[in-house]
Length: 224
Image 1: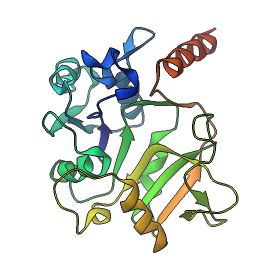
Image 2 (image 1 turned 120 degrees about the vertical axis):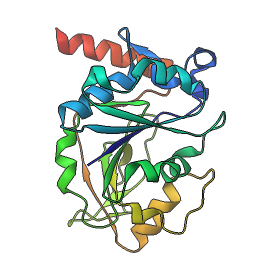
Image 3 (image 1 turned 90 degrees about the horizontal axis):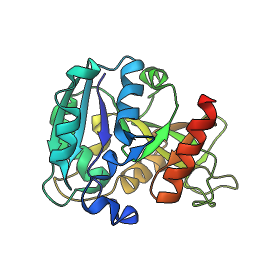
Image 4 (image 1 turned 45 degrees about the vertical axis):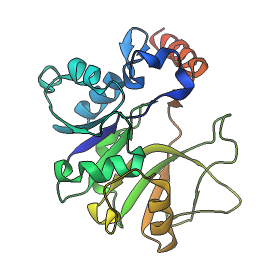
């Protein structure tokens, strides 16, 4: 099974820091954000990784290279100066991802989720990881039924973590271009084809400097 890291975002909320460095290379305790995810995927047993590139993408490729130092094979899906958003980015990368289900992880999150467990969890078109709502998203995104089917609405909503496993068929009918992933998932949810689970471990969206610093502090506490 292959994995993909979404690394083409502009990082507007982290400007001016991201004017000269792509968001996935912003350091956390001296190490680029993206390397934490690459290591986690490697530890989970993934060998083949796809990374999409847009804003300052050449710098990401220079840091990760062909994946040899991670004992992985890394290939790149190039989107030009302006990225294609989450849905468009995944669709553009489908030729590199193949015909089997694949894992996708947002490049601007930190999570200690056990990625190896995703390999057997896709029963419909997608399986997504939800987390308890953080302060910056108190209303959440999606809800979960007793049989782990994801849907919109409901009294108890959770936040989409940016981690999921998808079948290529999820993107049938899409065309190359810029579009978000959420509407694609929402359509599949209406058909009952998206399952999910709640993860209560360490997860942080690193979209602001405050959250970056909070993660650094948390990691220092964990290390003791």
